[in-house]
Image 1 (tube, rainbow over the protein chains, first blue to last red):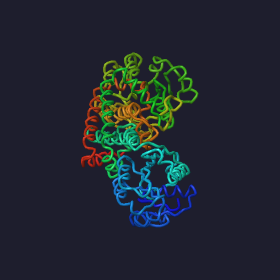
Image 2: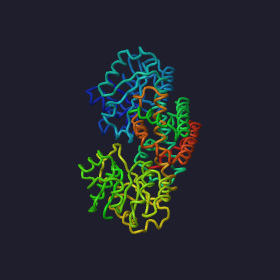
Image 3: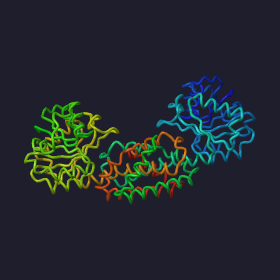
Image 4: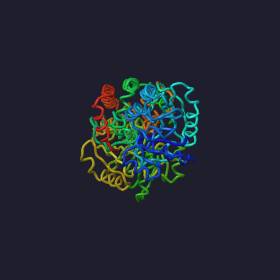
Amino acid sequence: MQTVAIVGVGLIGGSFALALRKAGWTGRILGVSSESTLRSALERGVIDEGCALDTATAQADFIYLAQPIGRILDTLHHIDAFTGPGTLITDAGSTKQAIVAAARRYVHRSQFLGGHPLAGKEKRGVASADPDLFVGRPYVVTPGDAPELNTPAASEFLDWLRRIGAMPVSLSPAEHDRAISFTSHLPQMASTALACTILEHGSNFEVAGPGLADMTRLAQSPYELWRDILATNAPLIEEALTAYIAKLEYLRENLRTRQMQTQFETAARLKK
Amino acid sequence: MQTVAIVGVGLIGGSFALALRKAGWTGRILGVSSESTLRSALERGVIDEGCALDTATAQADFIYLAQPIGRILDTLHHIDAFTGPGTLITDAGSTKQAIVAAARRYVHRSQFLGGHPLAGKEKRGVASADPDLFVGRPYVVTPGDAPELNTPAASEFLDWLRRIGAMPVSLSPAEHDRAISFTSHLPQMASTALACTILEHGSNFEVAGPGLADMTRLAQSPYELWRDILATNAPLIEEALTAYIAKLEYLRENLRTRQMQTQFETAARLKK
């Protein structure tokens, strides 16, 4: 890795650049983003130079796509011509099947390896970028085939992931999207639905225990972040919602039976 | 208020005693609990003396029932003979219709005024008792009729609630139970169901964003706390669950439509 291009210098892209620096990587970091974002990223020392996509990707041997999913799909469509052998393209999109399929279709001259850092913050944007964002967090990589992890470029990327403190986990794109439909997309739907239900049917919102704040924090997430996730993982989210609804119906039938005790005991086993 | 009897010296009862002391109340505090709890409460200076229920309630002009709901119902059944005019009995049970109905049936010689402090902690027991537990938190009182709040004993109790930093809110028992079915019981069911669903259908639990921990924290609550709540508020919890399930079904139908944007925007209005 000599030259890194960060495409989309927001919270994730900016944090990845800062994390590389903190871990001792000394190469050049090019940023591709809006003019105002590039200005702010340069001021904060997150990137060395702002460029257009074609210029940045032609110079870089490591390309990190940290855009929204829809923009990543778009970039993959156009990027191949500017890259060459030995270059690794990865991304940080939060669903993987659609992105890996697009890469397989459009990326031929360089290697693509999908990724998803399970890291985040309530505040977005390069102003919130944090070199420690990935520390102790799982970082999923989604090779189409296992040998994709063994190329020199992929090995070097995985090494840097460990050096920035992340915990790399390898899953197929389908395994990733199924796991995340339960552990991320379903919780979001559960929180959004809960907040809507309370607003539409409840009253006296101030009469609430401290648990309600926990349960409705995700409901503050902006739709613009979720539109592409929902669009690219809808069938698996539908399945997860169906399982969740069935469980809620079961609880509703059993509010006064001993079955409820079993459910509470099962639930308590999920220690996060 | 000359002599206070705390019946059930756990987190809530113990915190109420400590809060009264901190607010400058100088009377005598009697505790009714198991022997080991009384020993620990005496050591921590939470109570002045441990007594049996009949002795404590015969001496006290303010009786605070901080037991589980089922035990409160039981105590109300037996307590009347030991009390007299001018005495106020209140409770801290988290459902109110069953308790207020029991009090109406069995308490005749003294005044009963139901209560529910919306305060808590993950750790229970008198060892976790905290004089600041009620600070800034709503404290619902549930008079059968509004004039019940204007007796000298009730006025004095409400004054002390304000002095310990709580925010008194007056609701009818039915209003309370309906509000809380949405803001407390439904979130608990949503969290328990989510944890069970993920454990039974999911995989790779470590591949999760930080939001999952928020959404499954309530799922760690012990069933013993919830059994009586579910038993005494089942019809309203069923209604809340039915509304929640309908909302989840609507989201499932609309994962890829513009309706989802409206739902996210509605949900974000519930700022806790």
